Image (cartoon, rainbow, N blue to C red; front, side, top):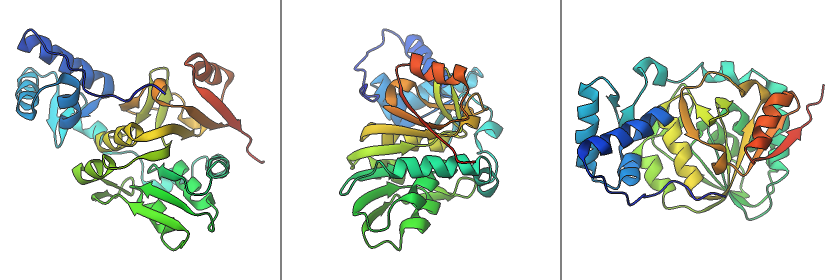
Amino acid sequence: MTEPRGSTGMRYRSAPERRARLLQIVEERGFSSTTELMIELGVSDMTVRRDAQKLSEGGSVRIVHGGVSALPSTDLQGSRQYEERAGLMATAKAALGRAAASRVSRDQAIAIDAGTTSRELARALPASLPITVVTHSASAVADLMTRSSTTLIALGGVLHHETLSFEGELVVRAIGELHLDTFYLAASGIGPRGVFCANDFDAVTKRALISVADRVVLLVDSSKFHASAMVRVCDFSSVDEVLVDDGISDDDLAMLIDAGTAVTVVPVAG
């Protein structure tokens, strides 16, 4: 798997050159945290904040809590309510959850993303299987907390009711201390440029989990292809395998294969 994003060690000949790179990063992703920008640019927190302020004054970006956004604030507030989203493509999501659960073996350390598809993985895990599960999903915590065979590490932070997930700097710091066998990634949208989610805080958490996992498996139902989602999480080089239901179109399947990503198509009963 391609190495996760890290320090580039790059030094810039001028502040305008550095700001141009900052703007490029933010426009590519939709949102980047201050910490991510510090690492990417190889500069201090104060330098990132000064550059962001200068770009903000010119109308190129928005400064939001925790980082810099290229999007209107209304686009970063999350998507439809959790229960509404859970009811969409429910049969396909359950099939994907079962398929993912069948790959988990005893004594593995896995992370389960916050999302309605990844929650089906939590539900499908055998109750007697001794594993470690890391998650920032309040729903997954509720599903797994009574299982004595599961070592559950809940990443606590600020609860966002739209996604039923815990987010924030405390979550990201905790992730940095971990090492995972597999991260089961969720998405709000998939396109030629990679994996997208609906809001800034979710993207930062997903990127952090990708960076500490030996393997990243994307669980995505076929309705997510070309769905509207504003913030890019990663490109396909960060994903080792995609599990998708058999409703995927030939064109979308070809897109994944052309990107060099391993794909498993999961049949959906009925």
